Image (tube, rainbow, N blue to C red; front, top):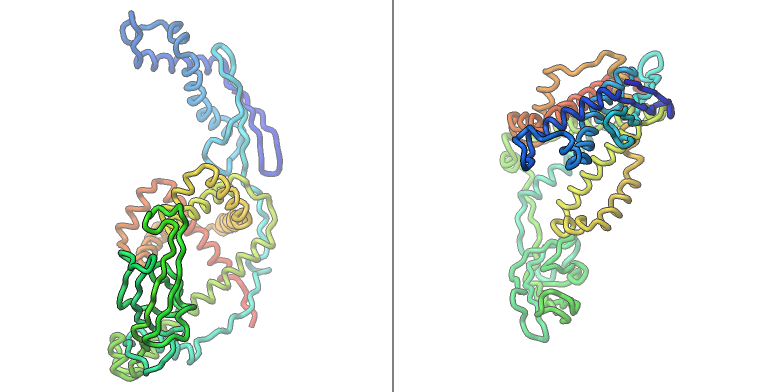
Length: 443
């Protein structure tokens, strides 16, 4: 086998691979032998049809099958022979000529290799310098948290007579729709509780603006026109007038801030004990937020101080993952209508084009960060042990509130690729923790 390597750039290589004639003929013979056992040719017993007849009938399909067998096998041999380690294990897109018996077969593969990353400024003597984050949990934050807890236990009571609705007010609404002054079937709702300012619709209507300043007993009317093409014939070309009556105005009554309230909130005997627990939880959350802020700064500095070619293959893979996530997100938020829209090839193509443009900078950043952290892990001898995997599975189970066994099953069902992704994420976290521990926090 001949392999000719051409440098196309710092991290891109072209491999022209020539498969010897005898190897090509051997592959043809194997494919025809398999085919002979599978097909039924009139006048011949199974497996006994002449190869010349099979070539006449199935030659084109056999050639394609031979190519499918040859390329992965000889691509793997070629990269080993050339001493090249591609950035991804999959066989790349191939440029090839038509295959023929009794002749060598040549094809060209373009691969990307890992860039050389010269690590710098991530530990002594030049560690990353971070400005100290002096945030603390203030007393007024504790008070706000207590107010939130009191509001959760608050009860609604009738507001004083003559109270006007305002942002945050609660209104009991009686709603009915009319078409040509006649009640519209199915368009009536009584005793509907609505909070102004919560940006919630009532029977599909935005009502907050019209209700502001209204008092108990007052009525507002909202007209809703429907196009002639509306699928419901009762509404097509009609205007529905919705009469909305403020049946009552309600206000929240907060429970007293006393020891009984504290006991209702959990295993606390006093307000002081509840406050102490709130402070403890908020300080824990703040500590985590400060650490994440420091790490975000570290990642930004690592990206700024390291310069190398980013493999397009990995960027494209990251883009595909981001687009898949975006599609799932849109369908989850907008439902079947969005799923149907994306089935349209033109809509799908336009959406994907825009997302690729929008996501490209972030995809490049993610790949660059991942490669820097991988290089740090390699240089510092960081590894992923079984205890790391167990701890991560436990953490995921806690975050998602499902069993450890279920998380393990999900990871296992994803095969080797899912396990490699999990290991990669853990190793990246370890690398980032390493840089964080060696950073210098300036007071």
